[in-house]
Length: 330
Image (cartoon, rainbow, N blue to C red; front, top):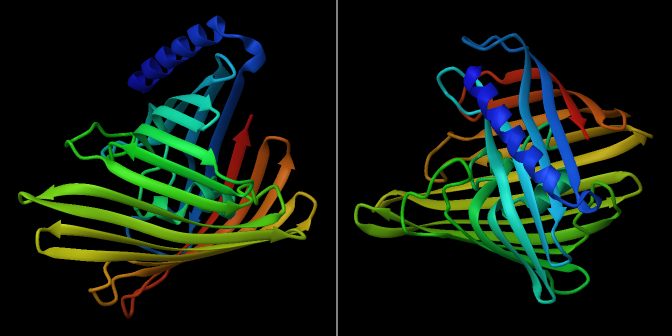
């Protein structure tokens, strides 16, 4: 707790100095808190039956130095210590955007491009992360350089060269991760009507037993929103090697939908199918989330939901949780 307090005070002082020095007219401060209550309905050994929890806390600040240069910082708090599960405060984003007539160049620690649009199509990050994020197909942020541009009115492209280890790890080798995302159509379906389709691809060289191997991820996705109904789906595969001669293919199929029943009240559902190795029999799982999201007021959302996780192993019992997720934001 003392360590957490010291880090929080230090980061607050840094932000305070930055805020004091900058032009207030261009600044933007954001904050989000993910809080939930969980009741485990299935009786599994070692599972907590009733629990209140902070699952994520974000504090962000952005400002523009000029029309061409702006920067963004994001502080994240998460339980990263496997031993005591304490909340750790760390930097998730620290980047500069250089805006040119040929596109935007982003330098520093920044969000990855592998599932940005898929997560926007799903629309409920505070309830559950994107399935690519959950299954480790890509980190949510990394350190490197990126290029983004709107090629046409509807076609967006973002290319990145990053360390590959994610924002929580230092670089461990000389190889870099190359990732590309192409999206066509409306990229904010949670708030606007329209449709989108797209693809994301990443390639990362990995040294295994003195051999240079490649971890490759690709995904295709699409979604639409009309008349208060939003739906999206994605298919993702990850090809990797655990040794020079042993390869595996992971696969994800995910579909999600939401419908506005009345103003400020939505019903939603999501189904994920995950196979960790196409060469191994009955090692996958099915995962379902269904519930309601009530936008109680500006800055507060409440989402009671049921989650069911079922292993493909014959005779295994389903894990069933009842949750109430809360989102507080500024």
